[in-house]
Structures are given as C-alpha cells and as structure tokens.
Length: 88
Image (cartoon, rainbow, N blue to C red; front, side):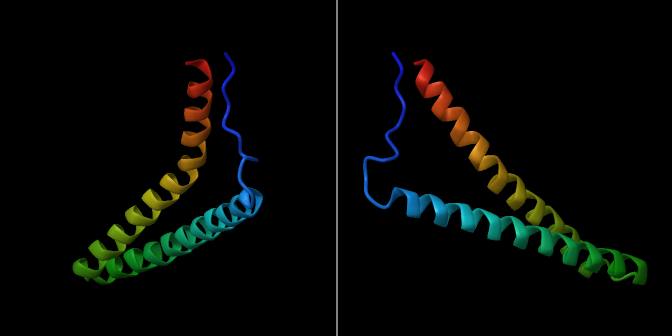
C-alpha cells in the first residue's frame, strides 16, 4: 500500500508552501544573527569580568542554537514522518 498525503487537495497549498519556506529562511537568518551578537556580547563581557552579562550572552547563544536546530530539523522530521507513514 502506497499512501502519500495529497498536497494538491486544497487550493492555495503552493502559496502556503512558499510562505513556510520564506519563514524558515527568516528564522534561520535571524537565529544566526542572534547567535553572532550574543557570542560577541559573551566574549566582551567575559573578558571585562562582567559575569552576569556573560551568562546572558551564553544563554542567548544556546537559545539561538536551539532555535536553528529546531527550525532546520523540522523539515527533516516531517520528511521522516511522511516516509514512516508510507511504510505503515
């Protein structure tokens, strides 16, 4: 049995795919920018001895990294779920 979702069943699905692709690009660009800015803040605060700001910079780097991983991994997760659905 070969079951695959019908992406053309509704009108406007191609527009929705373009919007989701654009949002994914924006999220990835923003998370990389936040990661760079937070890394610079972390480095400057660590070198000047301001440990409270350094910890906030480190948290910013980790949150941006997590956001990028989740946004990038979302596509891979959906493709994997679709392929698992075909095998059932």
